[in-house]
Image (cartoon, rainbow, N blue to C red):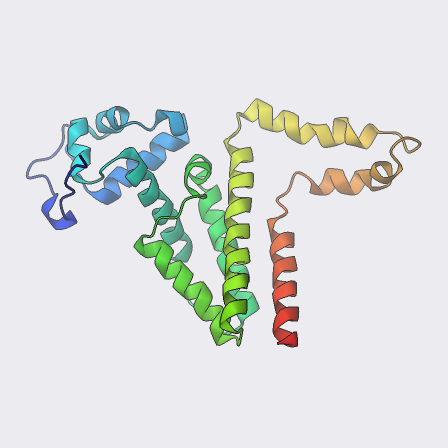
Length: 233
């Protein structure tokens, strides 16, 4: 049976934890983000989280029914951080470009959490506000509803997909990440033109580009496609 979740206003402890802090959803999420950064997803357990907060693990169920619900809350928190302070400027391409960069950066600031949450649908307040904002940008720009939804889906899925891809790279151990980055120079740049003419011809460009995220390029291509669709509309 699911545990009853107490409303936020009624959850405040009347006395501090062993570490002298008062529990709240925000404090639990901040601590969980730190644990993910330090220990990865395997390190996020109710027992470890309770120990980090100086609280009995059972107390955490007053705030979140399960670790999965906490995971969804963390995902929504990252979206909220991406949207914080953003306001549409009236140029739909510039607005979406800025939003995409914000979403990507917010997830990459917490790569372990990004890998864990970017594929989830939270249905929480920040996610809903982001969806409303993106659809508002597109509909205000003149996209018909069907086209607005199509572009919205491509935009948000692309942003989150690159967030997962790039965050997974950042979450690798330093030695593994350095080894992967070195392959372009140590292997691809050394391939002979007689057997691999196209790689050899572009080797310098590959070395310069392939260890950078392709997200800005992919986002610009998506915006180009959406603009062409709007012009045909």
